[in-house]
Image (cartoon, rainbow, N blue to C red; front, side, top):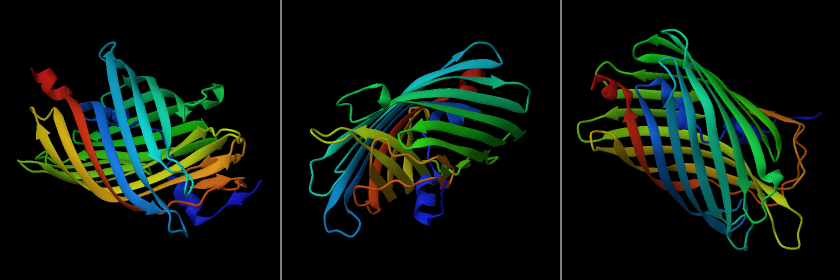
Length: 311
């Protein structure tokens, strides 16, 4: 078994995870029930070439908790994403889809300790010829410790079987809200970070998000391939809070690396653990895509638990 210590591969695999962050916010006094986003990256070149591709991404996520009793709540929901781009230079654009179900349990055990465990089955491909090979299973689990009323620590784990093989990563983070409720930090490293300050008129913030996915791709009269997506996004945002802060609109500008590496279906690595890949002898078929500027708009429907309880 070989060990891949290439820095690019480390960065590429560092932040592999499915879109599950509406679940991760359950430790706060709110839950993001609905998220919709659209991002656009102008033409970014393939590595070492003049040709490039535009990248358009649509994302939608629904989380619906069902309260069982004072200590337990069933978590249900679904996520959907669409990635539209050229996977090879001088070819037609391709649409890559991912549909994920969320089914799990959030439990409070003591005043300080709580857990969330969620199964994440999904279908991910170009949806031209859907088979059982397009089905993947993921598992997310997090343990939360409430140190103070405004400070919560997270210790988590994510694992999944993908087209490139098994992957797992630890999750370490915290949530902090200042006493005046203006400064907020929401960290789930190495996956995401969000730091913001709330003014009377709007909220200014900076965030970072990393995601990895695989999609099977079918071409006529050609072997089946798969796209190994690695994405890192760094952005500044302006958030407008409307309708009693239940509906939030965000505009973002930032820098993103969206690399869709193409491989023959069946080529796998032995294991991916956080930033490291073991036994990765795959042969990439397309040039890598360079990073570049991207723009994004998001709409969020947030349910404030504390406000509801007080009423």
